[in-house]
Image 1 (cartoon, rainbow, N blue to C red):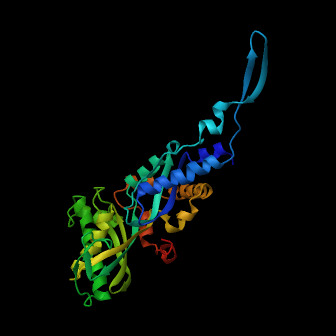
Image 2 (image 1 turned 90 degrees about the vertical axis):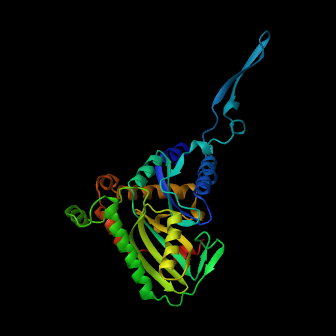
Image 3 (image 1 turned 60 degrees about the horizontal axis):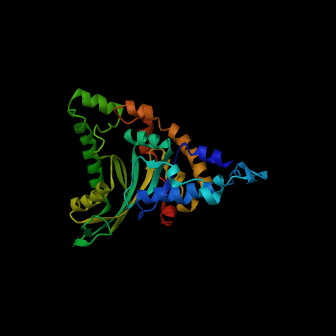
Amino acid sequence: MGEFSVYGHLADNYLKILKRADLSVCVCRMRIIMLTCAQDLCELESRPPRNHVFIEGNPSVALSVHVAPSFSEHPLVVGPRYQPDDIRCTWGAALGKNVSGVFVLGFNDGCKTVKELHIHRPSRVYRLKGILGQATDTCFIDGKVVEKATFWHVNRSKFDTLLASIQAAHQKQMFQQCGVDIQSQTAYELAVQGLIKPANGKIPVLYGIKSVHFEPPDFTIEVQCINEYEAYLKTLVHDIGLRLHTVATCTSMQCIRYDNFTLEHALLRKHWTLQNIMDNMAESRRLLKLSKVDERHKSPTLIEKDLNQLKKPLETTDEIETLY
């Protein structure tokens, strides 16, 4: 595939990468554009400089005419053929600096696509790890420890009961955000249709929360939600500790699913090459067609595809976590 064809392939596309926990989204974007796309594009074979007709000599005596490559197109004169500014790249849903996992980026015209996908509020799934018995000033493990407490009174039964109550409280909150009386006929009709989407795109709502590992003081929960952000996820772990009459701190946050995009479809840092990015874009276009963006935009509740996503068993990420 020629250089121009490869660049044209980036015109309306989006790819999924695995973001590391200590990198910001801006740094990931810069590395993708500068160290991968622009650099690899410039290393591809390009067309030779166009020939230019040179007329030399003394006009009063004799002139010589010869053809040679034009210096105006010589690589040493014009510099790299592709600059980072030639490639537009952005994201729809940003991940916090301490959050790792699936990160969806759009290239050129695909920037609009990822923005629209985020506006229609697809569901996301996070795997949160925490530790009981200590609390920090940032609610994350990198903060200063400000409090310690005993935790041996917390067992698996109490832990699961608390998570179930949190999920029930958020399901009740869905109706309150829509301005519907939970005892009304309208609320019943909406409940029959399925889980309601929040009317406000800035208020987080949990559709599901469950424990996948509990071995005090360490625990791991999986959260299926909409409109979440990093500070909310850290605070959620902190509140779980308080409601268990102890304290807790979040130690790890990983996004393992964003709509149809999962860890299985994302690129590791060692795979950030032009050819792998192009292959990943082709897979992303197929997955985006399954997202049914238009149907989700018109429906006041989660569509059937979203409900099926919430019921799916989540993949094991132990192998991927070791890479970070």
